[in-house]
Amino acid sequence: MKTLQDPKQLDSAIKNLEEIQLKFNKNKPLIFLDFDGTLAPIVENHEDAGMDDETREIVKQLSNKYAIAVVSGRGLSDVRNKVGLSDIYYAGSHGFEIAGPNNFEKDNEEAKKMLPVFTQIEQTLRQELNKIDGVRFERKKFTLAIHYRQVAEEKISEFHNIIENVVENYPDLHKGDGKKVVEIKPNIDWHKGKAVNFLRKELSTHKNPFSIYLGDDTTDEDAFREMENGIGILVGEHGNDSYADYRIENIEEVKQCLSALL
Ligand SMILES: O=P(O)(O)OC[C@H]1O[C@H](O[C@H]2O[C@H](CO)[C@@H](O)[C@H](O)[C@H]2O)[C@H](O)[C@@H](O)[C@@H]1O
Image (cartoon, rainbow, N blue to C red):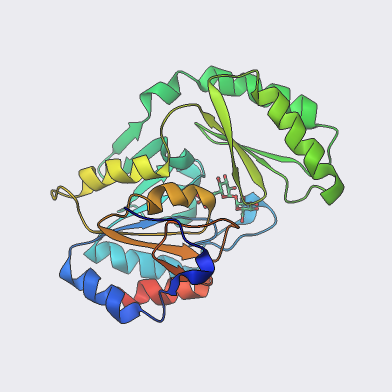
């Protein structure tokens, strides 16, 4: 079982690349990659995020050798456009919508029933949060992100209180946190970890295929916990303890690490 550790105590993946390479070469691994903060740097405005050509090329080359899925909180179509590779799998909306090559598509059926509720809560939240400058909404198919990166420090607790009070009236939904973002999600036992396990079955004939997962945020912890037969690598930090096995500092080290696996 994976245990929670202070990220500062985690070994550096860069310093242990040889060991990781060995495990990698011994198995036929599946590769799972988070997008924001892992493949693309965190930027002020969510719409401006993007991965550079070098990273795209590394992921493309890896996909010629291994099965790869990008697992993101972004909407499926958004993350697919931003990555721009057609031969890999994608899990968007924190795993509620999954797609892959040859028209593979799998939406979470229970979450589909909640689509009208999202429209309602979005309207209410837009009205209630209108008085706070800098709030940015990002509607994904199955989740709603409300960004506060551009909200003044003294307004942030009011921002959270408003959301808390509204979400209380929607038992079908719950809220989670990310980097300067509140995410409204279906109140269903489904997350990136469950999506990863679904994909592990889909992408391999092995019962428990060796896997590697790179991510930077609290939502990636659900996936790190599932890396029983595999390796979790935390990129940077998210302020809490982690189930990851290794740590790397930044996106430059993500590239270094992924290149070593080629
Ligand atoms: O699971 P991920 O691929 O890491 O997606 C998590 C969220 O990432 C995006 O928001 C974050 O990145 C933005 C761009 O750098 C930044 O402005 C924002 O503050 C971050 O929270 C994305 O916009 C969300 O939809 C994702 O859920």
